[in-house]
Image 1 (cartoon, rainbow, N blue to C red):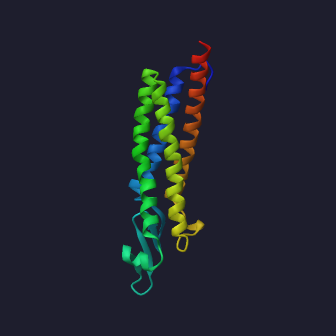
Image 2: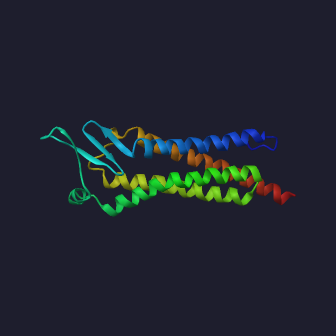
Length: 180
């Protein structure tokens, strides 16, 4: 992929495919599925939903912030996890436009900005997810994790792959500049 004879169309295709893939995964997980990491008939737990099965009424009861605090859920950690996870798709939109601009204008500074934003996303998403899972571990078991969790992990893997590709591209570009 990074040889000097690399087809420029292939480079465009790789970068844009990765960007579209992780943006699609994030929007599926956080918008379409509303961030519900656990979505079972007996419980629905996500970044904005915390519903547990009520045996008396035989239906899901969604808990309020006050109820969650009584149950021992740290609300500051929950808000911080929401921020970390939900800021990621916004940054990804900036990453995609920055990469497109860098590809078209052959702008090294744009690549550096994209690298930095991807690194931030690569830290924010797993940090927010880990924080959420840590503070809800009484109610969320590994077997309960569903499609949203898989989509978020997949998006994170694509971030890391894209970050590696950009770092290698920058290293090649900088070595070419120094040899010229």
